[in-house]
Structure formats: C-alpha cells, structure tokens
Image 1 (cartoon, chains in turn purple, blue):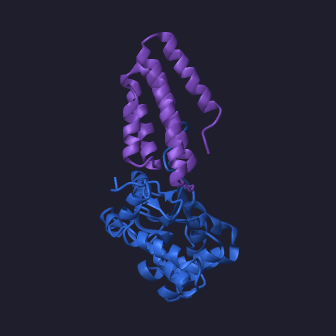
Image 2 (spheres, each protein chain N blue to C red; image 1 turned 90 degrees about the horizontal axis):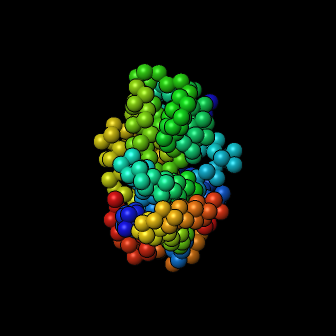
Image 3 (cartoon, one colour; image 1 turned 90 degrees about the vertical axis):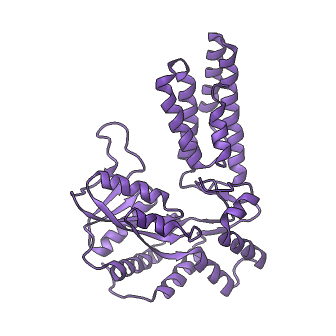
Amino acid sequence: MLFNEFLTGLSQQGGSVRAYDKCAREARARIAGEPENAAALHLIAYAAQHFVDAYDDQPLTVEMAAREFDYFSEIVGILDGGYSVGSADARVAALNKVAQMLASGLPS
Amino acid sequence: MFSNSFPDRELIARTVARMLLEIEAVHFRADQPYTFTSGLASPVYIDCRKLISYPRVRSALMDFAASLVFRSVGFEQFDVVAGGETAGIPFAAWLSDKMGLPMVYVRKKPKGFGRNAQIEGSLGEGARVLLVEDLTTDGGSKLKFAEAIGHAGAHVSDTFAVFYYDIFPETPARLEAAGMRLHYLATWWDVLKVCRDEQRFDAATLTEVERFLNNPIAWSSAHGGISELP
C-alpha cells in the first residue's frame, strides 16, 4: 500500500489536528522524491490541510474526529486501490474520484 | 489606558471564572468528549473568543491582565505586544492599548508567497516582546510563535493568556526552558471551584470534570483519545 502509512500515523495520534498537520507536511515532502505519485500525494496533503484549517481553533468532538478519519481513510483507500492496479486509467480514475469528493465538501 | 488598580490574584481568578461562565464560554460534556489539537479527549471546552463580543467583560479582563503583567514583570520591560493568530490578535490589541505599547501579530506560518511574511507590523531588532494568546494548554503554539519572533530578531520573555488549562504540570517549565514566563488570569481549577460554590452544573458532571483535570491522560485513554502525549 503506497499511502496507507498516513492512516497509521493519524490513528496513533487520535486523528488530532496536529496529526493531520503532520500528515499534510509528510505528504508534501514525499512529492519531490515520488514524482510518479505527486498528484495523489497532493490530494492527500490537501485533504489533511483542509482538516487542520477546519478544526484548528474550533471545537472537535471525538465523534466528529472519528467521522473525519473514516472519510480520510476512504480517500486514501481509493488512491491506494487505483495505484495498486498499475494502469494509468485506474490511477486517473482514482484521482478524479477523490478530487470530486474533495470538491463536493468534507463531512461536518 | 490601564486603570492602575492591582486586584488580588485570587479575586482576579474568581472574577474571570465567573465572567466566562456568565457568557457561556465554558462547556462540560463528558458523554460526548472533545478532542484537543494534541488528540487528548476531554470533557471540557472553553471558547475565549466569545469574550470579544462582551465589551464590559473584555475591558475588565484587560485591566486585570495589565495589572498582572506590570506587577509580575515590571512597567518598562516590554517594547511590543504580539498577538498569536487568530484568537490572540484582539486580546493583544486591547492589551497593547492598556499597556501603552505597539502591537504586532504573528501568523501560524508564513503566507508562502509574496513577501512570505509571518509577522505583521513593525518589530525592531532586539525588541522585548510580550506574546499574547487566548489560551494555554500545553504551550506548543507559544513555542512556535516565539520561534518566529526570534527569527525576526526579537525576543519573547513573557507570554500571557486569558485562560490556562493547568492540566499538564510540565507546561510552565517547558515554556521557561524556551525563555518564557507564563502569565494567566484563570484556570480550569478556578472555574471548577466557582461551579461548585455556586452549584452550576450537576454534581456528576463536575465530578467527571475533576477526574479529567486530575488525570487527563487516563481520562482521555478511557474516552477514545490518545493514551500518551506525542
């Protein structure tokens, strides 16, 4: 799994704002060394940063954090699924699906 | 300007706790806990940003703040008051006015484009800075703001927050290690005491809150949060 490690880190740190902040930074940092995965990593960084922007300075319940983690896991799962197939079409389809999800708004 | 009165610290803490309760900035919820930025689950949440909407309350708070800082540190020990983005900015503006000092504000991170500024306003080389935020939990954000101010050639010797959680014993020492003294008006313990004295909230809720305050890590672990601080 190319991107699953992001979920492990988030899970270990309770899906907190600081954990998503770290996730966004790590995803951005990987882009330079993995140009073939840049689009997926950029979408992961975007989704994680969106969480930070939404909940830093705002109340976040444990329940909401769990819902957001499920949503983020779905995004990572779609990207991992598309990239594991190996075809360019599968990758593009996964990227487009995640981009659509992000454009339509995160759960709240 | 500052009213030049110096109320007793205990009176300040009790008055501030009552103000926060009066404007309903205090939230206790043990059945559906909150998650702190660190991942710690908590039955308590405080929204100090509500204070900006209550001019009589905020004016009194800033008088308290000025009296506390002047008494603890001195009257001529700062060149600038710095507000930490976002919630610290209005409090820094009011406090700098009370203290008769210039103000700057510090972004959480540089803008990333243009002149890439992290500090807005005029901050001179070697300036002695009082850093202001609304809250202090574990001091993490203060360390980052102070670092940014340090990179600009100034120095944060003291930091003020309206409210200090006072649940992590190591927080003041952590800030001191970075060269900062922590000042604050009230803590969760002050709020809990006023709640008990004035019979606000039910007894079971307050017991749960006290359980959290006494051992936040254990409470967090038992309620879906982290079991150790990262």
